[in-house]
Image (cartoon, rainbow, N blue to C red; front, side, top):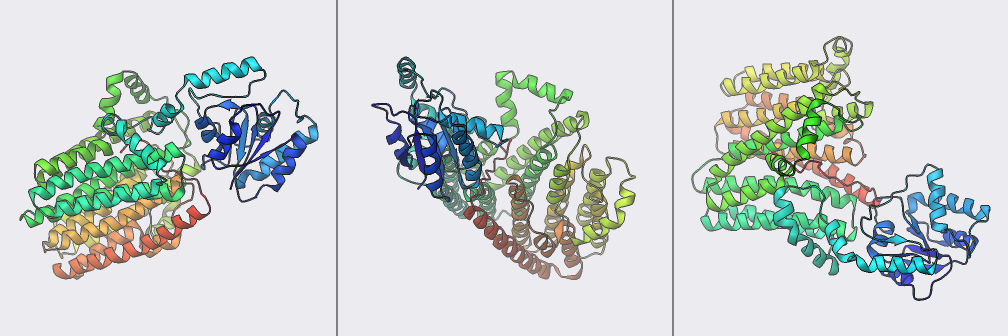
Length: 605
């Protein structure tokens, strides 16, 4: 149980002790700085500890924000400071300094907790101070100030602020206006019944999988039920994050589950639609796979651009200035958020079209909408990159190299091309990545299945992929390299499966691309959690993007169409098993050690 140490002169009628106990703290009273230091040393080392001024007046949620958020090792609000086990040593040093200075007596006017916070700041410690907004947190120095603070507390509805803060400050139109107004109350209902965000996340996944099963029936009733259930799944998807913010139940495992399950739900639903269409005699597996490829490449563009500019200085380009100007006009903000087809708008469109039309029409609309939004966002980011004066850091270059997912073939070849690559123009990396990828996809599409030319193009692709990563990816447009690689690999699988023209080839290709895409998303979430990329043995085991592309082309040349379908299925199962086992092992281990990673996708895509 976490420990709270109350310091300073007790105030008759104060509720601070009961409020701390309601937050789960074991409360101890200290007579002064020396006693506080003693109690601090006795507190269990594996638990959170807090030092709180007994004169504190404020909202319970202000205390909750300041003392219970698991994401920050050190945190403080006026009159209270807390440390998790990882930061206990820093807190102990600051406390010892205050005690040795002799300033921590019972009659001291200043708050001991605030002095400890100041000492932590002087030590250069990273102390989180939550945004309290209208919430009150104060240590009144006299009865008049105390009365004024209590009046300020009474004037603000603590629960209303807590509900409002449970909703993301920036989200899509559908989520903001059609989901969050009531999903926040579902989150509160869940919190009061002891449900966790992970349980709600799992419920959202199960609901989406049932929706996919309904779509797979191929009946009108099944399609209507699928649309309704998909919306219900999205409501729960919003609720889990709101529950985490409402009750401050953040965790590494929860962040990974939320991010991973979003992709699993959407792509499983695509598969359900394709199965349902097949029952009605319409083969839309190519459209389903195309939608998954486009959506995954969109996300890679988002991730890659953000990582490339993670440490860059503020964007002062004309394009950024125009964007800021548009954001100052209310209606343009919502139009621009809807144009990018974020998850709320996308799922609402899919759900409505599923219920009212056919899977083919649903996929056509999805492909057109995603293609338009991808063009809009990518064009804007290219313009920003070209007009931006910024130096990319080694960290950004490392992140892009990890996102590139280069295997042993590209790595070995790149070492031999490093010197020559440094003499080439700055646009070389994205240019050769695009040309090499376009060559292998076009060759696969324009030649007969089983011919040798896709294999030749795949060998060229290995060489161009190596040249693209032969020098650090610090160019203005080098963030385009990972999405070009993703598009080349995924589209090669799609085209060759379609050219095989045998029943089951495209579903097998769907499974393979889904397994590889999971690996690429997992790489992103590890990087965003400051955990680094997946281990090299994993990347080498599954071949890297260029190795997998080469293997697929070799199989297409050597095998018959039916054998090719079987090979795709085997590859899909093998890749899925390897990446899933390693991913689950990593994230469960990270959760056990309390890593505080939280994965938000920035722009609500």
